Length: 485
Image 1 (cartoon, rainbow, N blue to C red):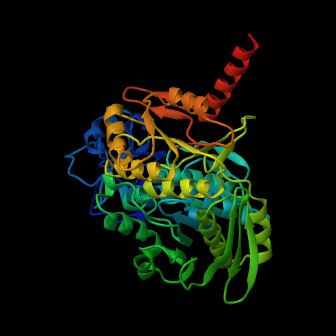
Image 2: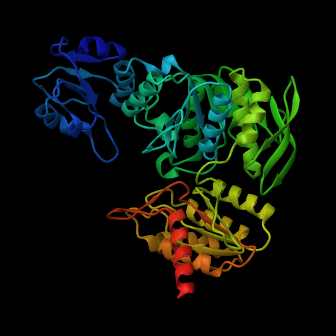
Image 3: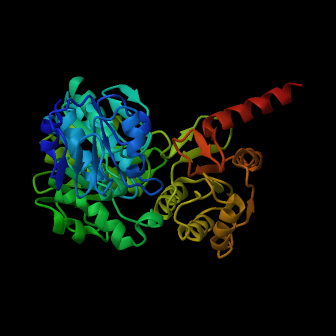
């Protein structure tokens, strides 16, 4: 593609050099530049692409896009106001604007995004559509599973993925849209047919600094969608609704377009009455918890916005089997129950523990930690929540990253000490899991919170393999082997 044609997709402030050059690809990492590449200088939080223009040219870059002054170069230079936003539009143009050729459904919120994507995907597939999914756990094209590096990919990788989805016949794309991706313009060029708000509670304050700033970032989605499916019970509903063209509200505690009542919760799932202006029917979702009702309502709301008959939605929800790492019961063959959940924010931990307490028989033993290089203020809050809703607590490491893991544990302990819950601290997560299994008694529930679907642990100097399912299975097998000696 000629540079002149490609840059028609963006607003430029200055263009120097020959616009007739042939572009063979786009990169924002100079190490990925090949002859003919358009190199886009992105100002990141740890590095600045403007510092690598010479390296990019040495590797064969045919032209440079930048927002800062970079001096005279021997290749065309395209100046823009925001190079990250420009990357989004350039990427879409390069891949033929794939998002415009499919129905786009975007889901934002602190908790429930992943589960909602799977529920919505199931509803649409039950109607015969082919669906692409983009999210935290994995990316999918129909039944094909692809690795996911982050909740919402950078715009270049996102458009490459969307292009592949379109080529393979997807009618719909259901994607998680993180606050980071909205604030950093990763989805700047995408117009969503439906946008969804699950909820907004404390998370990512290391990045956004305040809850209001966090919510404002989330609200960007609803400026860019045709229909906003919004949780009316959420404190930030009014903000989201003020940005939307058309609103379909859902909830439990307020008057709304889509309301759940007569809720019954047990360890096998939830049943509830769904009431809209047109109909009233019973729904069943085999995933326990009050939050599951909200996730189901959000998904039904999307179905309504897409014109899906309620009968298809009821059947699809009833067939759901849950999501890996979300209230996932691990088959151990023991007389106690082990559950893995991704809960890594205060509200998520509160929700999963509240749900478990609704069907527990004996004790709830909770094992959890908090990630390093992330919002420190939530650590004592989560410690207090875990202490108040558990019968025994094991505080351990999550992903400490570059922080001292013992310093993180002390932050968590501050909150635990405000409760009467007995607890102990075991920094090594594998040892902590082994100990939880050792002390579990018949009828107990052991919750491993924080890692969920993740199969790794990020330490200061390396990332190690850590799949809690494997840790559980290996320990059980070692116990069996020992008992046979």
